[in-house]
Length: 133
Length: 133
DNA sequence: GTTATATCTGAGCATATACTCATATAATAG
DNA sequence: CTATTATATGAGTATATGCTCAGATATAAC
Image 1: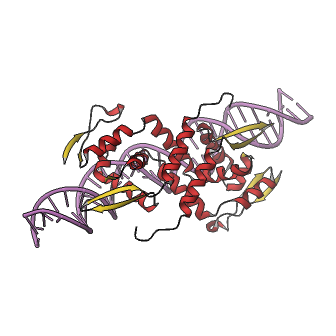
Image 2 (image 1 turned 180 degrees about the horizontal axis):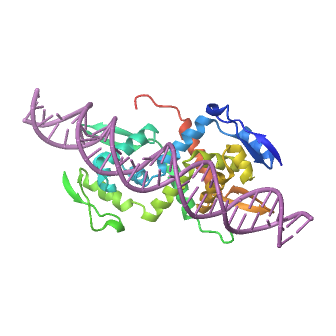
Image 3 (image 1 turned 90 degrees about the vertical axis):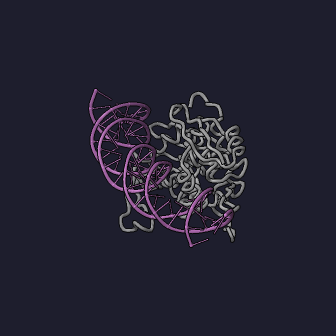
């Protein structure tokens, strides 16, 4: 066991924290293989976008067909404003796209990533519990 | 355009909401293909677990090697208590497991799902921006 | 038994966030 | 131009959540 000085993020270079470390080599290896801050942040935002009941329902619906804002609001039984707010977030993260037809905006999934992510997560939650763990 | 009565969740069967619907057939089809409530909720919790910087860093570290609580705390530069709280959540969702060696608990990923999910999300965030959208 | 180490857990708090409401914008019809 | 429809947006608010702190638990050594 030894004491270890951590290098904080860029914002906190002055106040480094001191923590216990049991396996120095493991921590060092993890440090070397760690993702860049921007990647972690982007990953986090992507998963966070999927981690909401309303947005999940929207994405699942768009996986089968394109839909407009008010239809999605009807499906989820929440206000069109709420749907619009969520769609903006999903657009920002490039998870959905839209096409305009007059005053109506039809939304669809941006690419296959969402489908793949949901598919794997479905596998996970449906996996049978293992005894003794 | 027509008015539509929505069936709320089990908890709110009494106060059904009335919303605009443009494409009745789209909404009906989406209703038929919609996931069960428990599946949506489980999916949501799984993605929510991945949608946090600390937990993502933990999972990414465990993808390469098993680690104990205090090493993870040292890596993330947060308290061991905070790590323990997050690991409990990840354990509950069967995303990680542990093995005991004396007083030390070594954590590892429970299966390949986490790796696959992160891998696809990495693809997504690294995808080049498309102009005109 | 006592002591030390590693981890866990509940409570409290500060921040994040998902919604509602009111209003603004964009496209179409007249 | 005005009116209507569909959507977007900013502000405010109630809830959710990630952390710290204090204390509890589990294992090993003595």
